[in-house]
Each structure stands twice: as structure tokens, then as C-alpha cells.
Length: 332
Ligand SMILES: Cc1cc2nc3c(=O)[nH]c(=O)nc-3n(C[C@H](O)[C@H](O)[C@H](O)COP(=O)(O)OP(=O)(O)OC[C@H]3O[C@@H](n4cnc5c(N)ncnc54)[C@H](O)[C@@H]3O)c2cc1C
Ligand code: SF4
Image: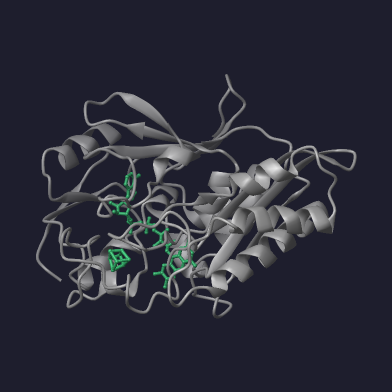
């Protein structure tokens, strides 16, 4: 780990000013990802701006919209266990609790969770080429061991997957990211536009501009609470990232599907909204055959790499299974 300057701030304006003023500085929240990356020399900021004192931990309803606002610095554990989240957004509770461990969730914040970096092993190995770590150096995984890597939306520059569980539920719930800009003004980013596909710039994970701070994540009201489920398949049952995961939510009118939301983790550089599956399901009856057909429709566009063809069949099975669990009231 290299020496760095440590700066503590007490409000959001001071935080964005400090990070904007220094191109090599980064916000420090729970530190559960950033400090690991610094120890491995993958991240080498010259300054850490500690934002843990900012007053951004509230979870409360926005009066005008009825949306639930979740502070960027609320801990993952507190978010998952908040009574309103459990009651109205059980999909989010399930997804958060499927990630990491109790100890890590007690440290990890919501903003940090969104901005955690890929777990591609070549990204962590500074002896290997990696365009995400050093643009132009190549991609070790493209023709290397790519069992964990993407089957949708990858480019020749990067085939990594985005690791967060929480974000897969947020994608299905059409969350909105609230951001404070470097000049102190606010902007919002629709969740679908927050994370990005690698294209020619895999070093950039999301659409934040330098110095921008996530202040909160908003969850619009919905009718999914009784019919949603997060299903994560991994190599072992704890401390493991998803091979493939699915966040499924259904709004029903009798036995007819009014609205379906399906998002996938472990398959792309960003949370992957399974729009083909969603479109197929709208207006259909909630049967195992239709869930299977929706899964087939989505996975038809998959482009597996040498070592991850298994994700295509796995994806089909767990989309169908998550939808069936959602239909059977999969509350946490
Ligand atoms: C052993 C282990 C297992 C794990 N398993 C899982 C898993 O199964 N599923 C899963 O989803 N996650 C898993 N994680 C990842 C964990 O969820 C993340 O490390 C954590 O959510 C990051 O939050 P943090 O507050 O510690 O972020 P930090 O490490 O402090 O920051 C991460 C990044 O976000 C930036 N950042 C932080 N807050 C903000 C903000 N408000 N605005 C803008 N940028 C910000 C930082 O500058 C940094 O670049 C695991 C981690 C470990 C160590
Ligand atoms: S997949 Fe992306 S993160 Fe992994 S080695 Fe290739 S460029 Fe780096």
C-alpha cells in the first residue's frame, strides 16, 4: 500500500470540493472495497476523503413523490433490515442479505456498494494486462480463464462482470440515483443509465463525473412487494459473488401478469435488465411454461466466452425459478 493523504469532511459540499480539487483523490465510505484495492496496488489514490461523517444515513419517505429515499451512507445491514424496506421492497432486503457477510454488510454503505469494482482476477493481479486497470494494456480474461465473466454486452476491451447483489434488485425496482455535482448542484440518474457497458472505456464503471457524490438512492412506489424474489447461484453459500443471479418481480391482475421486472447479476458489466423476458411476460398468464419461454427469449441473445457457456443454461433455469418463487410470494 502506498502512502496517501487522509482528509475528513463534515458535509457534502466539502466532500465534493475536496475530491474535485484533486484528480487522484477518492471518497472513502466503509472502505471494504477501496482499502482492499489499495492494499493490492490496484487503486492508488493520493488522497482519501473520508465521508463517513456526512449526514446521509437517513431512510425516509419523500413527501412529494412517495418514493423511499435511502441515504448513500446508510449501512447495507441497516438498509436491508429497515421495516419499510422489508415491508415494501423485500426484493432489496433479499438481495442485500445475499451479499458478502454480516460483518461486511455492517461496514458497507449503499453508495460504496453501487461503486464497488469488478472481481475479475486479472483486474486484481497487477502482473497481468487489464484495460480496466490500465487502459491499452489488453484484457487478460478475454482469452484467459473467463468462467466468471460476461455473457451479455461485453467488448473486446473488457469481459468483466459487475459484482453487486444490491444493485441487481435496484435495477429491477427502477431506482433513481441522487447525485451532488462538483459545483454543489444536484442531479438524478435513472438506474438503467448509472452503470455502463465496457465498450472502449472499461476503466469507467459508471456515469458519475469526477468529484460527483452519491447522496441517496430513491425507490419509486410499486405493487411488487407480494410477488418478488432474489435468487443467487454461487460456488459456495457464503462470501461468494454470484455466478448468475436474478431479481424477479411481478405485478398481477388475477392470474395475468400486468408488469414483470427481471434483472440479472453476474452476466454483464452492469446490472442486466432482461427486457426480452419482461416483454414476453406482459399480459401472459403466470405459468411455468411462460416463465420458461421468457427465460429462453432472454438467453437467446447471450454470447458466452470459452469457459462460461454454462451460464446460458444456468441463466435460463434461474430466471424461470426466480419468477416461480416470486409468484409463490417469495418474501424474505
Ligand atoms: C470478502 C468480501 C465479500 C463480498 N461479497 C459480496 C457479495 O457477495 N455481494 C456484493 O454485492 N458485494 C460483496 N462484497 C462487496 C461489498 O458489498 C462492498 O465492498 C461494499 O458494498 C462497498 O461499500 P463501502 O462503503 O465499503 O465502499 P468503499 O470501499 O468505501 O468505496 C467503494 C467505492 O465507492 C466510492 N464511493 C463510496 N461512497 C460513495 C458515494 N457516496 N458517492 C460516490 N462514490 C462513493 C469510493 O470512492 C470507492 O471508489 C464483498 C466484499 C468483501 C470484502
Ligand atoms: S475482463 Fe476487464 S477487468 Fe478483467 S482483465 Fe479484462 S479488462 Fe481487466
